[in-house]
Length: 592
Image (cartoon, rainbow, N blue to C red; front, side, top):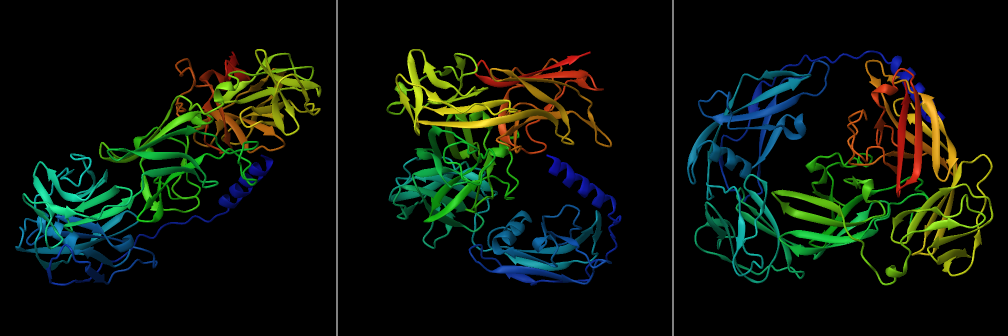
């Protein structure tokens, strides 16, 4: 933590010496526009139409942002028919498809097979200053075949549809997608506006007909995309399974099977990676919980992941619906990941992917009853630490999962065993045995607070870690409020003066616990995901507000706020319980 403080000090000194930079917003606008004067539209064409402009530049040679506006001939662009950012936002050109131009023509009142005249112009912007170029160019658009009345919703029908009446998801205006079971047969699509199918020319038409569907995937699961702007239908093969995978190892932790109506779901046990946890890579010295979904589409593995493509940008749930929305991207090592809610760690959960839930491509995670595997019924429901080497006889473990338990205790170096009623377990060599017997556990080192003992009866392993010390730390500047003193039986307590931190414009009261475990300070015991962090606990906090979970340390995540009474150096006592009725939690007491 001293290293972090040093880095912060160096950065602060560098920033203080940085010369002040002022953006030069002076620029001139384009003086010439160029594009085809006439376009005969074919919505199925792959041809692109490019709109160019020249002249105008920034005074300092920097970038200018451009917007292209279209209006009907005789208009003044006050209410344009359409507008687009230029290519990449700053290039002096705009590339549009025939399909996009067809939408402009349609929205400008041009019917099927008709011709209409339009005008286009360019706006330039820099540093918040926006300027019109003051000139415009005319373009004539002639529409070919098409469907003017684009529906707001769409459903699948016909003998090829094994889930007839299933609704498509509206991807964008005029584009619809569905994941569904199919077979060979006739197919058509329905909406409140009419009936549609693929005609003999391979384009979408309206009427009472249907088309023969033969492109059936081997799995029987297809994703069908219907595009009213290009009048095309696309069929892709999906598998009957989607895989929830950890990013750290690409290991599948839950297999989701197709349930119908575009839904995949599966049940499994969640176990994050971290020090002392099974399967954790050697390089992972923190709690690692990042995940995504992997699916096979037309023989290519793709990721259904989060909207955040920054490899370092994954966050824990923020309480918004769109946090759980899925985005289809290429499968990379660390991009487009979520961090799983820590409330699910070491729990059994049901994961559900909806390809169309109320028009959204999203997923849900919910705790459910554990899956009972053969032999699980013989595992202990509770566990206690017994023997001469225990801190106290019968100290209870916290149950983390099926057959998985954890305890914090000061060991004396004598013989111990793990008990559940009359059942006794002990470590024999590298595995756990059931029956009469004990094992000798190393004593907690002098100067250390306690030993963290994780006992996995199901897999027959015991992991020991040394808790060197536990501190309460302000998130704002990494300063300690108090170093807690071990009280015994997994309880720590400490008192300090809690001055809110002056951040040069506001005062910050956020804190968390930072344990040192086996000499490593990169963990934190902090606020659980999904617990409101915005309010001070002045008597109206939720019952689980002070509950704790273990995370990889991050400055501004998983903090609590001190109560209002704790400001101005008030003597504040923190009591941390590693096992209070089966939960890790803490209390804060302020002496006024």
